[in-house]
Length: 67
Image (cartoon, rainbow, N blue to C red; front, side, top):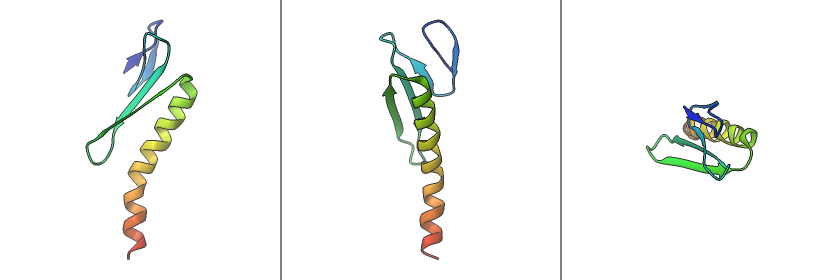
């Protein structure tokens, strides 16, 4: 769990840099770390949720396509 500059907990995989930008990262299904830096916390949380969902669901969609 990362913290912002004031010490507030931001959530799993989210942190704030000294310049005020927020950093979000997660590990995809291939073991590669994916990271993005955004100025707004809400944008970063949305990106993180969308990216994790797409990473998790892509394999299911592609396998069912070929059945």
